[in-house]
Image (cartoon, helix red, strand yellow):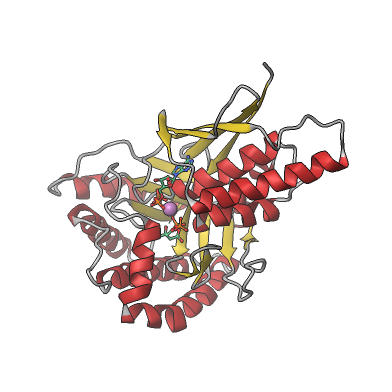
Length: 351
Ligand code: ADP
Ligand code: DP6
Ligand code: CO
């Protein structure tokens, strides 16, 4: 029996202005715009292989070796959209193999902790959508794939692009203007580096999807975040990237992470993603910046305890040389697998 197969990888992106909140949970439309840096796939990546065959009797996803749910409404929306496009292509070109009606086997592996606040859903859904689009030979642009991936996981729309990427919230009900756009290529600021400190590889207690819905429903502080804090941070962040102004980039990154985690604490009942080791990493960044006499490092935390530290290559010594000694004394810190990453170059993403 013939098996049609295609593999792809997708990168992680770590937001410096965070997406947190859905205005439309069905279409996965956000309450606010966000901005992220796409990290190189040399260190963290999802590898997904999609295959289709008459031999398959149901759609199956194997995630890190274990069967994983494909029946969720958002995953189904991605599958439906991809199959509809393939069916249209087959209608136009009758010589193409009929794949749209075949069941799919998706085998995916993250080479970094899953559901631990390191954007596995972003790399995961970006790879999921692109692997199937490649299998179906869809003539879809990164923007079109991004719009589909967004429906799987919001942050995934940014992982179809390299470099510095904004997700514009948009205001249309159909979500067609809720898009990711590259605000600058990696080559614009190639000195940017990210240190990823794996504080815990365990699956988070509250998923991002569920956490943000609780925040939207119960936090008063959140209303202020989306009305004034995020719009100001988006402007400042885009300016700091255009100017390659690290001090400004760092301050907005740290303030936005703090603001996001404050809305989690203001959720009722409160959600705590950071732990004592996370807070020790924040103190370590402050110590490093004080010792340097200027801002050379910026921390940010997604919905999980793991820290991402942005810094410039020229300050590697000051940042990396100081970090581990500072954390060594912290209770609960064991130096596990940590990652050091550069920014993803765009060429490798759309290929
Ligand atoms: P994270 O902080 O890692 O993004 P989320 O709570 O947002 O955590 O999402 C985790 C979920 O994303 C997983 O439980 C799984 O459903 C989905 N996911 C993660 N990796 C993949 C993948 N490679 N392929 C498909 N889905 C994935
Ligand atoms: C804190 O994109 O994982 O990482 O759309 O429900 O799948 P869903 O949520 P997800 O949320 C990401 C939240 C964040 C911030 C960010 O990546 O912008
Ligand atoms: Co996620």
